Length: 215
Image 1 (cartoon, helix red, strand yellow):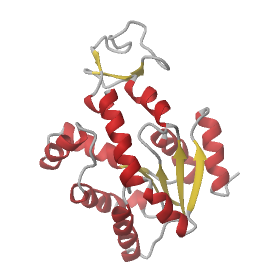
Image 2 (image 1 turned 120 degrees about the vertical axis):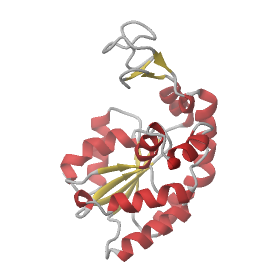
Image 3 (image 1 turned 60 degrees about the horizontal axis):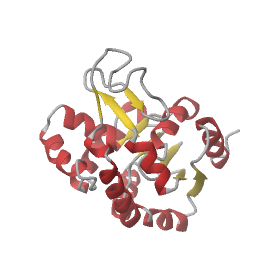
Image 4 (image 1 turned 135 degrees about the vertical axis):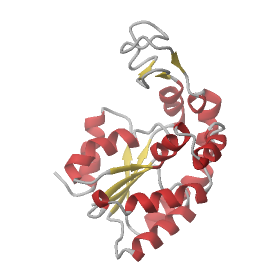
C-alpha cells in the first residue's frame, strides 16, 4: 500500500500513520521527522530548514525532496509506505509522481484528515516538550503531574517555537494557501478520501481503513 496522509498540522496524521504501519506492513515516512532530525543534528540542511520551521513557513522544496527520494529508496519502503506531511504543495505532488514513475510505482490512496482551525490551535499550542528526554505532554489532554516538570526525568518542560499560538496560526494560513489545493489535485485523479479528524484515534483509524477497503 502506497498511501499519502494529508491534513493541517495537528490533525493527527502522525498518530494515524504509526497506527497503520503494522496493519499495512509499510513504514511511516514523515517529512517533519526527517527535518527535525536534521535540525537536531545541526546538519547544513537542518540549519537552513530551522529558519523556516521556526516561523511556520514551508521548508523549500529543494531541502525536502532529496531526503524523501532517498528514504523511498530504502529497503523497507520497497513494497509500500505511508507518507506523512509530504507532499505539501501541488508542485511537490507532481515531483512525487515523477519519482514514483521512475520506479514504476504509483500511489494507491490519498487520505485527507479534516479538523477545524480552532481545534488545531488548541491541540498544538498546548503541547510541552521535555528539554532533557524529549517526552511530550499536553496541558489539557495529557498534563504532567507537576506543571513544567517532566514525569519521566524531572527535566524542564518548554513550548517549542513552532508550537506557539502565533506560529500555529501562521502554519494554518500556509496550509490554506499551499496545501488545500492538493485536495483538488488528488480529487481529480480519484485517489482522495476525506476523513473527519474529530474523535478517538481508533475511530479515525477505522474510517481510514474503510476508505482503503480494509476491514
